[in-house]
Image 1 (cartoon, one colour):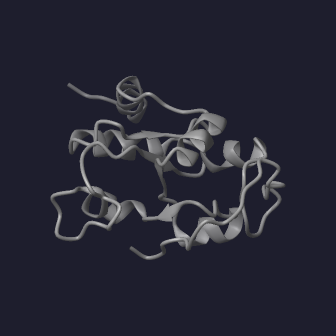
Image 2: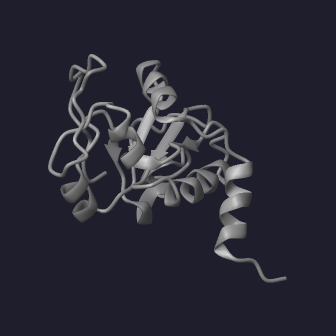
Length: 148
């Protein structure tokens, strides 16, 4: 049986409770872990979300699997709500589905990705015309984890 990437993406999304940017922002405020999987060059060009943990896609499962020797400290169990963010919401759906396959049953992603997040006026920093105003009362609560 042959499947296209559109088939794979549709299957991944059907299994996720995807979040609109505002709902993702509220979930982060309630303790969800926002994970930006975009490559460094893309983050430099588009901007960044200050609250996001940066874990590039190629190591995502190893960093978030609670059973992995290479996990980050925030990967404390399979009940952690992980919200994956990419540029436009395609790669993040596939990544969130992979995390769900590992047992992270609350893994999901942001509909529209970083572009939708920035258009919604949610906090972003950095270069590019997508940089938002921070109108939602953002204040830094700690360091951004890089290169984990």
